[in-house]
Image (cartoon, one colour):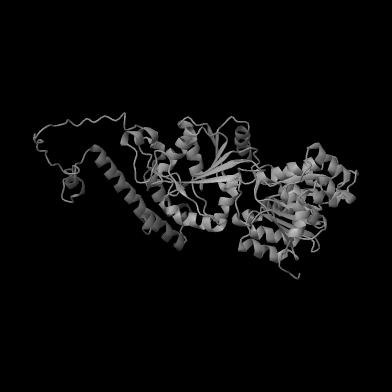
Length: 547
């Protein structure tokens, strides 16, 4: 395929889209009916720009942050394109896979599938979602009944390809949703395999919050003259999000600081991001012990556990959801007021994804980030990406260079809590809730004036008096009855071994019998030589070897 640089929408075209309504798109009546049932009249900026372009059938690269409504921006025109092929016939052969939507995580796949189902509920079109972490058999049954739209994660889709439960030979539209995250998660080889399984003639749609060089390289590998659609400057953060950076002295201050921040500001419905699965679990446990209702989601949890935690958070049963980047992808939580970066992300693009959880659909939000000295380079990379310089602020009680009183640190953290939850994953975590400084007793007597302390007797580090008797070759050997019994048994064993290992010595009786047999004397046959192993075996059995 001949590749060209992406085309952008002109300023005049953008102005024309300013007052567009869903009715202006002339979508199929059944699809418009579903839109009206949801109460939607005015499309979001990404929807207003993307839907008309996608309807033309060209390849599209969309730069849109999470929460801007991009799912409807590609799912509505896809459904409209497939409506001429829709049928009430129940035969699976009449419902081949015609559209494939790939997402990086299970949560995002579920979210997209729910939206597609909502928009297609008045149409005969079928859809299903497939991802790992759950039983594959129900997915196989759904695919074999026939579906036009499949929403999938790359790994599980390839599992179905291997089991021949899905046929991708009639796919007309391919969508990569949050493509940048899929590359971050190492799905590039899987994506390349999937793309090679698809028909050469198809429409390709790629949506991403950030356009890194890797994303642009991926787009050039399979897209034809894609049209670039942006609702904001690429890699930019929303103006509705207030970004606050708290400078801290060290990693050990983070847990106390996040707990203090949540309690002092009475925050609710908060997502706290940690870089590691173990750190995520430990932080949730710590917050629970401090009286902050919390739950954690990360990659090691099953899909059922993650769903349960997420539902509890959405229902308001817990205040804080502690999550890793991977687990938080695709979370659809309305009116989320705040996110906290407990750890700064390892890549600047993840910062954009994280804070995009709040300030969605025009709402206001706040993103707090904790920064220690080692995070300065990562913070500069983030500032460069979003083209914004952050002002470091001070959190009350955690001013850099000013340590809290020893008693206060002991009350907050407890003994053994100085190790970090991130990075080295402190090994003393199990003791963090132990004895505090306030409850600690000092048993050493105090002295006043010039009273001298009594001289202390110097003792060796350990008593080595037994070493001579234990390791000295000249030390006497104490023999008792048990020792003599074992010694006799060893001697008997050696005798047995010698009987088997040495050549058998022919007895006089056997020698005489052999000579008689050779001379042909009568009765010689009754005096056959004994079995050469008979004597040793008889001895081992306790009998007389010559009997």
